[in-house]
Length: 95
Image 1 (tube, rainbow, N blue to C red):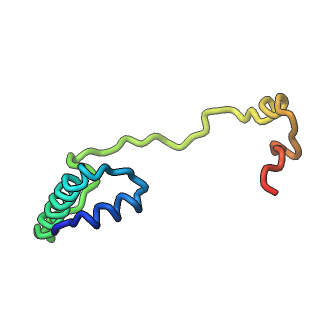
Image 2 (cartoon, rainbow, N blue to C red; image 1 turned 45 degrees about the horizontal axis):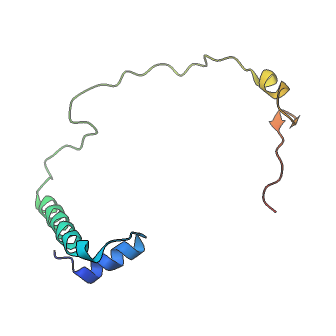
């Protein structure tokens, strides 16, 4: 697939990128090469390949989900400027 110079300018504008006119042709070539590589990868038959989340057969060691910290709400709220019913009171910022 070939990307034209006008398309590169449009992509740069949509992405809010400032691309020099001297570099536009190289961007077009690079983007075209990337899209050609994606087309090659899409052409590969992967129907017999098992999906995997990691290239190695590893097992993740998980720990039990246990609370290890104490509830220190009162300690933290004691130094807060304003609290009410266990919540922090903050100034209104949206009218």
